[in-house]
Length: 252
Image (spheres, rainbow, N blue to C red):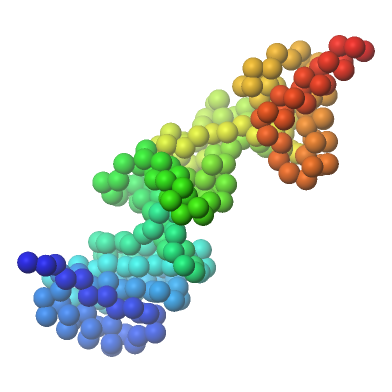
């Protein structure tokens, strides 16, 4: 009663004839699934879709699965291409975790299929950030702040004023989906490119009651902090800088 998945590892080293013969043989032997695994991360999306079509042509009733790695940053694209070619199982990993080049990322693959291609995955997208954070906690391996879909700063605002203000007009103008879709957030950062309206918005967010004439001096002090410390300025530090600047100005 077991279901059998027959995997061909290092598929990028196989000839077309071998792929066809393998898929035909294991399908005839009763394998319900044939996995084409590119563990060396040597296939681009076009090559992956090509071998999937070949495998399907030879596989009889067996379904095709793929297993892509991210040596060139193309694992999600390869998964999508394989799906378009007829693969019905796309192997992924939470946060791409694996030794060596990451596997195709769970969150990025799921959202690409759902949001870009309209393909239902059955995955609760709103839980993707929770899953990613759990993965970080379990492994002790943090992901990049701008990691696709689930990065803490992927949706961050910190650019010039026009970008920050435009979020109130159209939240999809500079990001193709909203953070709420995947359970993420949109932090407001103060950076070397932040303008006065962004600074004022951040002060309001932090509950710092600043006068209009205080905003630019506070922003300039934050810029100086970033330049001297050579790192981002944190929320508590922004508030502290703001109070120092306002006290100094009140004495003047």
